[in-house]
Length: 200
Image (tube, rainbow, N blue to C red; front, side, top):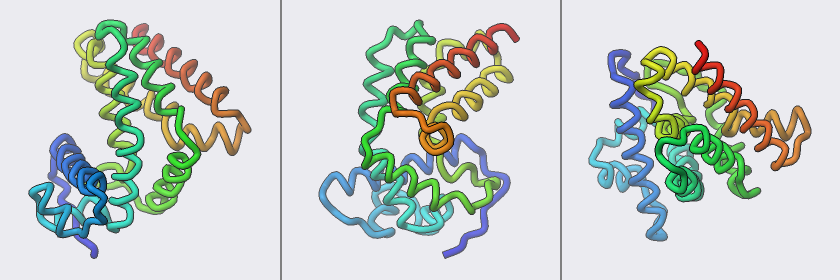
Protein backbone atom coordinates (compact mmCIF):
# COMPACT_ATOMS: atom_id res chain seq x y z
CA UNK A 1 0.00 0.00 0.00
CA UNK A 2 1.70 3.18 -1.18
CA UNK A 3 0.99 6.45 0.58
CA UNK A 4 2.29 9.82 -0.54
CA UNK A 5 4.16 11.58 2.25
CA UNK A 6 3.62 15.20 3.20
CA UNK A 7 6.79 17.22 2.98
CA UNK A 8 5.60 19.75 5.54
CA UNK A 9 5.47 17.28 8.41
CA UNK A 10 7.74 18.11 11.33
CA UNK A 11 10.55 15.60 12.02
CA UNK A 12 9.98 15.52 15.80
CA UNK A 13 6.28 14.81 15.42
CA UNK A 14 6.96 12.11 12.82
CA UNK A 15 9.43 10.47 15.14
CA UNK A 16 6.94 10.50 18.04
CA UNK A 17 4.25 9.00 15.84
CA UNK A 18 6.60 6.32 14.56
CA UNK A 19 7.63 5.50 18.12
CA UNK A 20 3.99 5.23 19.20
CA UNK A 21 3.32 2.77 16.38
CA UNK A 22 6.35 0.63 17.21
CA UNK A 23 5.60 0.73 20.95
CA UNK A 24 2.05 -0.44 20.24
CA UNK A 25 3.34 -3.31 18.10
CA UNK A 26 5.88 -4.23 20.79
CA UNK A 27 3.16 -4.32 23.45
CA UNK A 28 0.96 -6.56 21.30
CA UNK A 29 3.86 -8.89 20.53
CA UNK A 30 4.69 -9.06 24.26
CA UNK A 31 1.17 -10.40 24.83
CA UNK A 32 2.00 -13.33 22.56
CA UNK A 33 -0.14 -12.02 19.72
CA UNK A 34 0.63 -11.63 16.05
CA UNK A 35 -1.11 -8.31 15.48
CA UNK A 36 -2.67 -7.04 12.28
CA UNK A 37 -2.24 -3.55 10.88
CA UNK A 38 -5.66 -2.68 12.29
CA UNK A 39 -4.64 -3.96 15.75
CA UNK A 40 -1.49 -1.81 15.79
CA UNK A 41 -3.30 1.25 14.45
CA UNK A 42 -5.98 0.96 17.13
CA UNK A 43 -3.43 0.46 19.91
CA UNK A 44 -1.38 3.46 18.73
CA UNK A 45 -4.50 5.57 18.20
CA UNK A 46 -3.62 6.28 14.58
CA UNK A 47 -5.13 5.34 11.24
CA UNK A 48 -4.05 2.39 9.09
CA UNK A 49 -2.87 4.98 6.57
CA UNK A 50 -0.55 6.50 9.17
CA UNK A 51 0.95 3.09 9.91
CA UNK A 52 1.75 2.62 6.22
CA UNK A 53 3.06 6.18 6.01
CA UNK A 54 5.84 5.19 8.42
CA UNK A 55 6.23 1.53 7.43
CA UNK A 56 5.78 0.65 3.73
CA UNK A 57 5.35 -3.03 4.66
CA UNK A 58 3.88 -4.58 7.78
CA UNK A 59 6.78 -7.03 7.93
CA UNK A 60 9.12 -4.09 8.38
CA UNK A 61 7.06 -2.84 11.32
CA UNK A 62 7.01 -6.25 13.02
CA UNK A 63 10.76 -6.63 12.49
CA UNK A 64 11.42 -3.17 13.89
CA UNK A 65 9.19 -3.87 16.90
CA UNK A 66 10.92 -7.18 17.59
CA UNK A 67 14.35 -5.55 17.52
CA UNK A 68 13.07 -2.82 19.83
CA UNK A 69 11.69 -5.34 22.29
CA UNK A 70 15.02 -7.17 22.40
CA UNK A 71 17.32 -4.15 22.62
CA UNK A 72 15.42 -1.40 24.47
CA UNK A 73 15.97 -2.63 28.03
CA UNK A 74 19.76 -3.21 27.83
CA UNK A 75 20.37 0.19 26.25
CA UNK A 76 18.13 2.05 28.71
CA UNK A 77 19.80 0.29 31.62
CA UNK A 78 23.26 1.22 30.32
CA UNK A 79 22.42 4.93 30.36
CA UNK A 80 20.55 4.85 33.68
CA UNK A 81 23.52 3.27 35.48
CA UNK A 82 25.69 6.31 34.67
CA UNK A 83 25.75 9.66 36.46
CA UNK A 84 23.67 12.20 34.56
CA UNK A 85 26.47 14.74 34.15
CA UNK A 86 29.13 12.23 33.06
CA UNK A 87 28.33 12.48 29.37
CA UNK A 88 31.46 10.69 28.16
CA UNK A 89 30.64 7.65 30.31
CA UNK A 90 26.98 7.75 29.26
CA UNK A 91 27.92 7.69 25.58
CA UNK A 92 30.49 4.93 26.07
CA UNK A 93 27.96 2.72 27.87
CA UNK A 94 25.37 3.47 25.20
CA UNK A 95 27.73 2.59 22.35
CA UNK A 96 28.81 -0.65 24.01
CA UNK A 97 25.19 -1.62 24.66
CA UNK A 98 24.24 -0.96 21.03
CA UNK A 99 27.19 -2.98 19.74
CA UNK A 100 26.73 -5.84 22.24
CA UNK A 101 24.01 -7.79 20.47
CA UNK A 102 23.18 -11.47 20.37
CA UNK A 103 23.51 -13.33 17.06
CA UNK A 104 19.72 -13.39 16.81
CA UNK A 105 19.38 -9.62 17.24
CA UNK A 106 22.21 -9.06 14.75
CA UNK A 107 20.41 -11.29 12.23
CA UNK A 108 17.23 -9.24 12.70
CA UNK A 109 19.19 -6.02 12.35
CA UNK A 110 20.72 -7.15 9.07
CA UNK A 111 17.26 -8.10 7.83
CA UNK A 112 15.95 -4.64 8.71
CA UNK A 113 18.84 -3.03 6.82
CA UNK A 114 18.06 -5.19 3.77
CA UNK A 115 14.38 -4.24 3.91
CA UNK A 116 15.11 -0.51 4.06
CA UNK A 117 18.27 -0.24 1.96
CA UNK A 118 16.55 0.45 -1.36
CA UNK A 119 14.13 3.00 0.08
CA UNK A 120 15.27 6.55 -0.62
CA UNK A 121 15.09 8.89 2.39
CA UNK A 122 12.55 11.66 1.96
CA UNK A 123 10.52 14.09 4.05
CA UNK A 124 9.05 11.22 6.04
CA UNK A 125 12.42 10.75 7.74
CA UNK A 126 14.73 7.75 8.06
CA UNK A 127 13.37 4.22 7.64
CA UNK A 128 15.66 3.00 10.38
CA UNK A 129 17.87 4.54 13.07
CA UNK A 130 15.23 6.74 14.73
CA UNK A 131 15.57 4.73 17.96
CA UNK A 132 19.35 5.16 17.81
CA UNK A 133 19.00 8.94 17.46
CA UNK A 134 16.74 9.07 20.52
CA UNK A 135 19.23 7.05 22.58
CA UNK A 136 22.14 9.26 21.52
CA UNK A 137 20.19 12.43 22.25
CA UNK A 138 19.33 11.06 25.69
CA UNK A 139 22.96 10.28 26.50
CA UNK A 140 24.14 13.69 25.28
CA UNK A 141 21.31 15.72 26.84
CA UNK A 142 23.49 17.41 29.50
CA UNK A 143 25.63 18.90 26.69
CA UNK A 144 22.74 20.31 24.65
CA UNK A 145 23.07 23.89 25.94
CA UNK A 146 26.85 23.71 26.06
CA UNK A 147 27.15 22.76 22.39
CA UNK A 148 24.36 24.87 20.95
CA UNK A 149 21.93 23.65 18.29
CA UNK A 150 24.33 23.34 15.34
CA UNK A 151 27.13 21.47 17.11
CA UNK A 152 24.58 19.39 19.06
CA UNK A 153 22.86 18.18 15.89
CA UNK A 154 26.16 17.50 14.15
CA UNK A 155 27.48 15.43 17.07
CA UNK A 156 24.25 13.40 17.34
CA UNK A 157 24.45 12.56 13.64
CA UNK A 158 28.19 11.83 13.76
CA UNK A 159 27.73 9.39 16.65
CA UNK A 160 24.92 7.69 14.72
CA UNK A 161 27.49 6.85 12.02
CA UNK A 162 29.92 5.05 14.34
CA UNK A 163 27.47 2.94 16.35
CA UNK A 164 24.56 0.82 15.20
CA UNK A 165 23.79 -1.67 12.47
CA UNK A 166 25.73 0.00 9.66
CA UNK A 167 28.87 0.38 11.77
CA UNK A 168 28.53 -3.21 12.97
CA UNK A 169 28.26 -4.54 9.41
CA UNK A 170 31.42 -2.67 8.37
CA UNK A 171 33.26 -3.95 11.43
CA UNK A 172 32.26 -7.58 10.81
CA UNK A 173 32.19 -7.80 7.03
CA UNK A 174 34.78 -5.28 5.85
CA UNK A 175 37.26 -5.09 8.75
CA UNK A 176 36.80 -8.68 9.99
CA UNK A 177 36.69 -7.50 13.61
CA UNK A 178 35.32 -9.53 16.47
CA UNK A 179 32.32 -8.13 18.37
CA UNK A 180 34.62 -6.98 21.21
CA UNK A 181 37.04 -5.33 18.77
CA UNK A 182 34.16 -3.63 16.98
CA UNK A 183 32.71 -2.25 20.20
CA UNK A 184 36.13 -0.92 21.24
CA UNK A 185 36.54 0.76 17.86
CA UNK A 186 33.09 2.38 18.08
CA UNK A 187 33.86 3.70 21.57
CA UNK A 188 37.20 5.12 20.35
CA UNK A 189 35.48 6.85 17.42
CA UNK A 190 32.73 8.22 19.68
CA UNK A 191 35.29 9.69 22.09
CA UNK A 192 37.17 11.32 19.21
CA UNK A 193 33.98 12.87 17.85
CA UNK A 194 32.98 14.20 21.27
CA UNK A 195 36.40 15.82 21.76
CA UNK A 196 36.19 17.37 18.31
CA UNK A 197 32.72 18.75 19.05
CA UNK A 198 33.93 20.44 22.22
CA UNK A 199 36.90 22.00 20.40
CA UNK A 200 34.86 23.42 17.51
